[in-house]
Amino acid sequence: MRHILTEDFARLLQARTLTRQKPSISKSSRESSGPVPARKREITKAEEINALLTRPIAILPIKVGDPIRPFALGLWNEIRCLLKPEISVSTLRKATGAYIRSRSYQIAVARQDSSRHDINGVPIDFVSDADRLDAHQKYESFRIRDGKRKPSVCPPLALPAPPSKTELIRTALLDRRRPPKTG
Image (cartoon, rainbow, N blue to C red; front, side):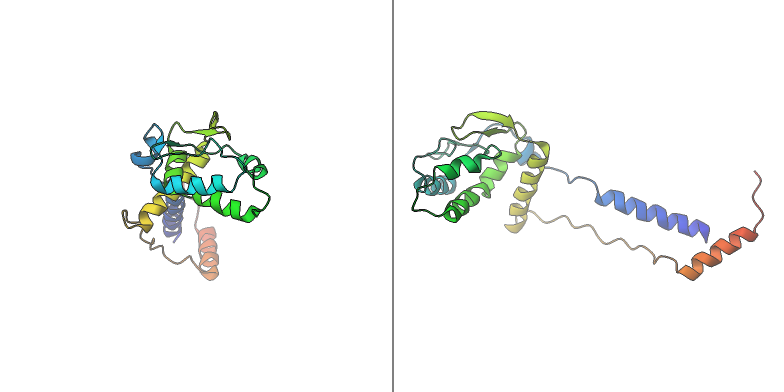
């Protein structure tokens, strides 16, 4: 019985370590380098943001093909200061959220050598590995949602039921009666 318990424990331990492994990341979005060009969708979203502000901000793309630049952390506070007085903050938040959650923006953040930019479009810091991985996972969820990639589903592990309390006590008592092995 003791041998069976150790096998079960080994299987359980292996299953736990398999679920903790980082997902494999494809070369398409993360390891590619260079700027991500803006599409018409991102230009429209950028124009919507600039229409809510007292002056346009340089970090946003102006025409198709301009690079999409990841925002610096805390940039929201600077953008909010430029909000027109008659516009609500929630309207600006929704517009910037739509831009930041776009597929192209997530690809730009997930790129290997991507940098964060200030409000003038000047690079100030690199994107952290955690943010890069998060952006890649969001991009992959777009691909799964669109049906371009099947989700990787692991089959459920068929682990035997854990031994009952009675079986554990019985095993412990039987092990006490056996003479110790000499080797």
